[in-house]
Amino acid sequence: MRIEHALLASSPKSPSIMSMAPETKPQSKLTTDKDGVQQERRVVRASQCHAGGQGGYTDVMVALGITQSREAQGLSLLYAKFNKDKSEREKAIERLAQHAIKQAPKLVGKAAGRQMARCMVLLSKLAVDDFCRTADIERARCRCGGSGKVYDIAATKAGGKAVEKTCSRCHGTGLKPTTTAPAYKVVKGLLPDLSQPTWNRNWQRFYQMLISKCYQDAEAAERVLSRVTSN
Image (tube, rainbow, N blue to C red):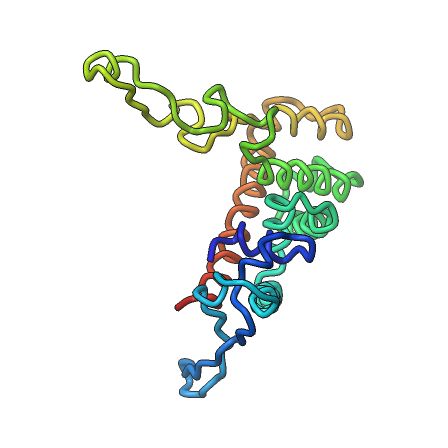
C-alpha cells in the first residue's frame, strides 16, 4: 500500500474509507528471530483495502499504529508532508531538534554557544519544511510545472511527435532546487558574527545532514508500513 493512500484513508472524513475492504481483520504470522524465539507479527494485507466498508479503515489504522510504534518520527514527517498536518509537523521538528543538539559538530556548538537550542530548532524547522515540499504547492514547483518532465525539442523534431524527457533542473521531482542560503540567513540572525566561510565549512553540511535524516526516517516508516501490509 502506498503511504499517501494510507495517510489519506486515516482521516475519518476521507471518502477513501468507503473504498476499503469490509469486515476484514489483520492476520497474524509467526516469525522466528535470530535467537530462535517465535514472535507473532500482525499483517494487514494490501488486498484487504480495496472494497467498501469500515473494516478496511480499521485495518489501515492498525497498520499505521504499528508503523507509529516503530518509526514515529518518520510517520510524523509523512503526515506533515502528505496531509499537511501541523501537529505532526511540530512533533517532527521537536524530535529532529533533539537529534540535532546531540549530533551537532563541536565547532557548531562552540559557535552557537547559548543560542545552541534556538539554532537547532530553527535548522530543524527549515529541514522539515524542505522535506515537506510537494509539487502541488505552486511556490515549490520547478519550471516544468511540477510534472518532472519537459519536452525534448530535438527528439520531437526528429520523430515528428511529442517526446518528453526528465527535467534537468528538478531531476524528475517536480520541485525547485533549493540552497542553504535561507538557513544561513536565519542562523546569522541569531549569530551575527557567523561568517559565510564558517557556515560553509562547519554548518552547511550539518544542515544538509538534517534534511537527509528526514528522508531516511520517512523511508524507514514507509518500509515498515509496506511490511505490515504485505501480501
